[in-house]
Length: 296
Image (cartoon, rainbow, N blue to C red; front, side, top):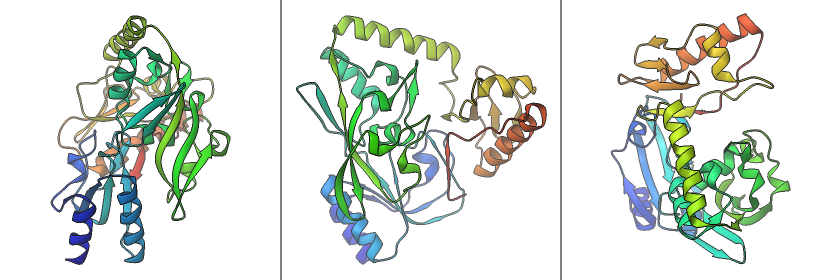
């Protein structure tokens, strides 16, 4: 009861949540505690408390790159939905980690601020995109991130772009999962609102034409190997449209693995292992997962 009282005084608390309700692929089992801290300071206090009480925890954004197990997670999931504030000053944009990128991109476009158009169709949060160094259209977050505010070993510190060690779909935060991205400062440039909106609309049309956005998924499943595309390799081994239980390899884009019939985490893992084995056998290429498996 003490934990319930503490968490509920520092954020919105749910005791009947399931991962399937807070991830975009709609897979995953029950969660003991789900809390959304009211602000960064409350987030820090919650994490300090959980560590002192030896309660396991997981920090997430909107669950767009996450596959979670079907068993009970006997810990606390911290969701950053209230950390969605931003401010702009002298070409620098400060954004909290829970801000949804499509929403942010649209607000910036209305103000004639450019540089985030490439990410406008990625259904994730600022924190998630920085963590993954997400990108599209030959740009990545590392191209516009100046610094990242991080909760590191109980202290809030600012890390430079170089200190984040960005590479293709990777950052230093993969090696330090206990560090929590709180916010980032992005470099923006002035543009014409109409042109920015037109570019974003064009790219959204392209995404809708080439990606199965109408079905639950976690986005692109595998990283592209050097000099090739994951979707091409999956297609080449005959797995476009492959179905296993409630999981479907998309007909439209084979690097999207869809939940089409109340799938379980085991169905997803079995399917992706099969894909990797087929590609390895045919082309001697090791496909690397872009999505994160948790509590599986």
